[in-house]
Image 1 (cartoon, rainbow, N blue to C red):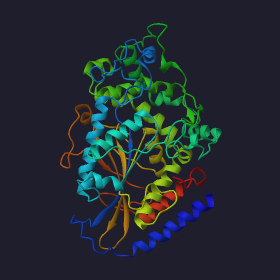
Image 2 (image 1 turned 30 degrees about the vertical axis):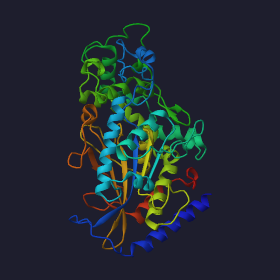
Image 3 (image 1 turned 90 degrees about the horizontal axis):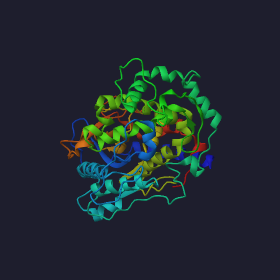
Image 4 (image 1 turned 60 degrees about the vertical axis):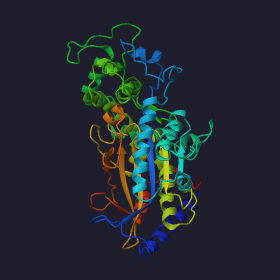
Length: 455
C-alpha cells in the first residue's frame, strides 16, 4: 500500500505539470484586478458549533464553589445533554452556511437551484451527534432547498479521516509520543505552571470565587471541591483519541471550556464565568486550552500519525478535481465542487500542525479553532495560463457574531484570514500556492505509513 501511495503522488505531480502548461479554453476572465483565477473546487474543513460542556454539571460543580449555569433549551423540550449543539449554536451554524452559500454562488460553484446543487456537493461529518447536527445546520444554511445528506460512519465504526488511530489506519508509538512532547518542554512539563502562572491564577480565582490579586491565595474552600491547579503537570501515555496525557493541565480543560461556550451561546453576563469574565479574561484563561491542543496535536510526530490520512485525502481530492479523473483516496467525484468536512478542533489543530499553518482573527488568540470556524482550501485556475493554485484561508464568526447571532453577507462577512503555506505560498495578498508545489509540500510531511488510499 505504501508503494502504491508513492506512485499515486508521483502520478499526481505528472498530471499537474501537464495541466499547468495548458491554457484554459472558453472561460471568461474573472474580472478581478490582479486575479484572473476562477474557483474550481472548495474544501471546507470546519469545527462543530457552540455546544454544552463536555461534562455534566454534577461533575463540573466539583471544580467550583458556585454551580455551573444550565444552558437553555428550546422551551418545553427535554434538558440539553452533555456535549451537544445548543439551539443558539445551530442557528449560528446555519447563518454561517448561508454566508458560504452566498459566497459560493458569487464564485460560480453553486446556483440558486438546490436540486442541482446537491449533485456537486459532498458533506461528511465525524460520527457524534454534536458533529452531525452541526453538519446538518450548516447544510440547512448552504442548501436550504434540498434534503440534508451528510455522510458519516455508524458507531462503533471509526471514521479513518478523523480518527485514524482508532480506525487502525495509523499506528502510534506512545513512548515516542511522550518523548516528542517532553522534547518541546525541555523534559520539564511542570515548567508550564510557571510559564502560564497568570492564566492558572485567574482560572483558580474564577473557580473559587475570589479576587485574582488576593494574597495570600486562599486554600480550597471545602473538602468536596477539587483544586485542579495544585496537581502536577506531567506527560504520560494516553489513548487513541488523546495520545498523550498532560496531567492536571489536561484536567483543567473541561472546567474552563464552558466559559467560551457560555459567552458564545448568549448566556447572561452573570452566567459567563459567574459574571467575573470579560472577553479578554476568557481569552486569557483559554490560553491553557490552546497550549494543550498545541502539544497534543501540533507536535510534529503527533500531527503526522493523527492527520496524515486526512491531509492525503484532501490533497487527492484537489488533484482529482484538477485532472478531472477519478483518483483512489479522493473524496466524492471529479465533478464535485464543494466538499464540507465537519469534525472537532483537535482535527483542525492537527491538520494545521502537519502543514505548519497559522492564522490570527480579531478577538481570538493565534491559531484558535473557533466554534464553527473552518480551514478553507480553494482550488482555482488561472484563466490566462491554465495553472491551478490552492488558496487557503481560515474563516470564523467572531465571538460577538456568535453571541449576537449576527447576520452574515458578502458585505458583512465573518472574520477571514488568508493562510500562508510554508514552502509553497507566493507573496501576494491571498498567499496563493501552485497546486503542484502544494502536493510536493504535503508529500514531504504526510507519513505514508499513516495514510491509505481508501475513502
